[in-house]
Amino acid sequence: MNLRINDNFLLLPESYLFSEVARRVKDFQDANPEVKVIRMGIGDVTRPLCKAAIEAMYRAVEDESKTETFHGYGPEQGYSFLRDKIADYDYGRRGIDIRPEEIFIGDGAKSDLGNFFDILAQDLTVAVTDPVYPVYVDTNVMGGRGGKRNGEHHDGIIYIPVNKANGYVPQLPEQCPDVIYLCSPNNPTGTAMTRDELRKWVEYARENGCLILFDSAYEAYIHSSDVPHSIYEIEGAKDVAVEFRSFSKTAGFTGIRCGYTVVPFALKGKDSNGNEVSLNRLWNRRQCTKFNGASYISQRAAEAVYSPEGRKQIMETVEYYMGNACMMREALSGAGYEIAGGIDSPYIWLRTPDGMTSWEFFDFLLKTHGIVGTPGSGFGAEGEGYLRLTAFNTHEATREALQRIHNA
Ligand SMILES: *Cc1c(COP(=O)(O)O)cnc(C)c1O
Image (cartoon, rainbow, N blue to C red; front, top):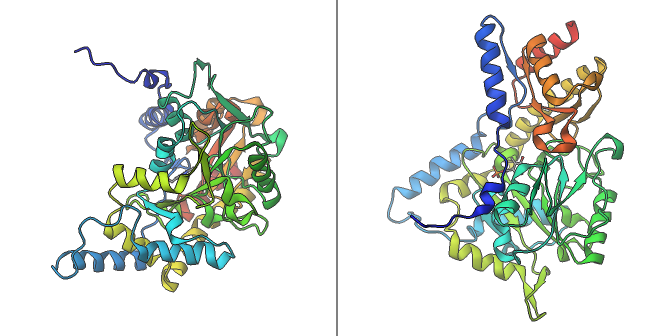
């Protein structure tokens, strides 16, 4: 067959991070069957869904069983019972005016983050932080914006280092991108941007005419009062930012699938004749054409998360994980490790000791303590010399892991 493929896919590096982690863990476990390996690299929630969401799903299934309450195709943008709740609870009650029509319900943040470029010109310059959530880079490479691959980097992408030297705060780049991805609280560094830090970015975007794609998947984990929950807490952000949210980490929906994207009416792009076009209008058109809505059952579950019981239950789970994060911060800094994160996110970003590489430290933790982390170098060149630990394990396993480090 002479069928041509999208060559851009061949520019993607093999994603071997998690398979290599799994291989090394298996080799170790085979050689040391008596060691109970503790997994601190888990990038998924582990606690069950809250009762309010489960009960809402049972009711939604019941609805689907009767002609009178059956729901077939729903609105592509999401049901208004959910969009109204989001506009009220996540925005209105925080003093932010977001209309339900500016909110698009989807099947999670990853798809929307990956699809958003459908409505933008295909040759824009893109900036990401380094280390980075790989979805931002890989989807741009697939879309032909990566340029040539050059070691760890792609020539066409602007990388903004986030490391100890800058206190894990992304600094404004000299070269101005058309689009910049920001993730706060951040995966993988676990750190979060304060209101003042984010304000600089909003002002920069307004001055330079660039679009911020703001990923706040970990919003529910924020504990610091100077860390904004939404980019729209910053004045003027509605003119320059799209916000991506998800029920995945907030409410344990990684397997249920539901998230949403906010595209404010104020957000305008330009067509090739220089005329202003509403991004909300284009995203709506895109969704109506390529997406048929998140399932009725998922959306009923998401709605239940906003009930008084639902809110209480999901916050109990968030606090369960954050209890682990707190223990980890204390024990690891007590053991002399340099750490970041774990205050506004379930991730701890650990500096490797004695100049070890990320993989050397990974092997050390595995072989000496039977603990599995994720090598920071897997998230970008600037992640070299770091390791990511997550707070998604049980209290018991987390405590035991920390005890092993303490007793060493
Ligand atoms: C987990 C995660 C998401 C959410 O992905 P879903 O598709 O909604 O499950 C988004 N961004 C980051 C950085 C994440 O870690």
